[in-house]
Amino acid sequence: MKFATRAIHAGQEPDPSTGATITPIFQTSTYTQAGLGQNKGYEYSRTGNPTRTALEACLASLENAHYGLAFSSGMAATSAILSLLRPGDHVLSCDDLYGGSYRIFEKVMRPTGVDISYVDARDVDAYAAAIRPETKLVWIETPTNPLLTLVDIAAVAQIAHAHNALVVVDNTFASPFLQQPLDLGADIIVHSTTKYINGHSDVVGGAVLTNDRGAYEAIKFYQNAAGGVPSPFDAWLTLRGVKTLAVRMRQHCENARRVASFLAGHPNVERVYYPGLESHPDHALARRQMRDFGGMVSFAFKGKREDVDTFVRGLKVFALAESLGGIESLCCHPASMTHGSIPAEEREKRGVTDTLLRLSVGIEDADDLIADLEQALARVPVAAH
Ligand SMILES: *Cc1c(COP(=O)(O)O)cnc(C)c1O
Image (cartoon, rainbow, N blue to C red):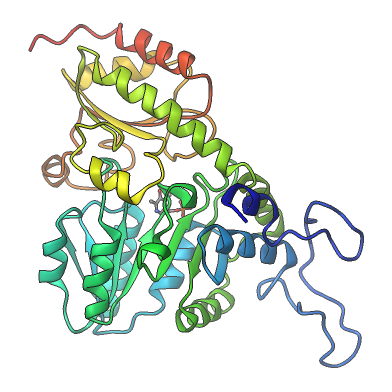
């Protein structure tokens, strides 16, 4: 079956005991057993819960994976994958990485004796040069945050596999609707389901999807051992959210395309970062690797930081907020919000300047989104250039 059908039906048979069409919220911690050793596949809800099982099967199906595991956050999912590492192991990653992933690499993993190095996300040769015999994981994210750079998943997988390393792709920004990394050679996918998969900005959650049986068993063991599992209600909300992923993503992409081309023609805009624009350095790779170009658009202002503040205060439909991937449009200032913990010099070097803004383009009417950006931009003096 095709993607949109699987999003609604995979793992979601009518409930066998009642016929309920929609998977119930199994709000229980424990399960009554008929006799010693006689359970119906569930004993305790940290280990397994039927609402969570449905979500795990649905997400696995959407990523063309045999195995799926759901977690209480994207970072809980990330830490479960990192449980595969032992002292002396090496992780090769890219410089344009989600801040929370960088933080757990540096502050939690490095002190345990795991080494991590970072290469330019786009430079395939740099991965080949930096990989070592002790490299266990190659950890990439594409498109990256906030500059929407692309990493060539198939090329990186080839290098990693030649050195017996597993490739982990954080597929949060693209969602499985736009990109299916396992089909391109990746071994493990991590999601913050908080973003596009749930899509309604009302749940924090995460997931791991893989076809690697050994990795699945180790990560599942850790899921139960450490216990970072979603509640039955959060699993249910996420399952409800993911049913509309295909229609939402189509609209996110359509709206983002219109917003990006509006911004590209505005006199106060210095540069637009959107993989769907032909001027984007990774446009050809985006065409090859993704089904469409996504709902995230970043842009740099012509002018001063104060102008950015005037602009964000003037927005009426876009909310100034962190996070992304929900139905409502958000605007984020990475330098002071998501990337505030990176030293200014390092940030500027990477292109995350004080005048950069990142938009999570929602699924409101695109005319209203453009009108909102236009009126807020009109409050800012046209930059003399
Ligand atoms: C939000 C996010 C995470 C972390 O997920 P949480 O659900 O916030 O724990 C990881 N990676 C990316 C790319 C994200 O955007």
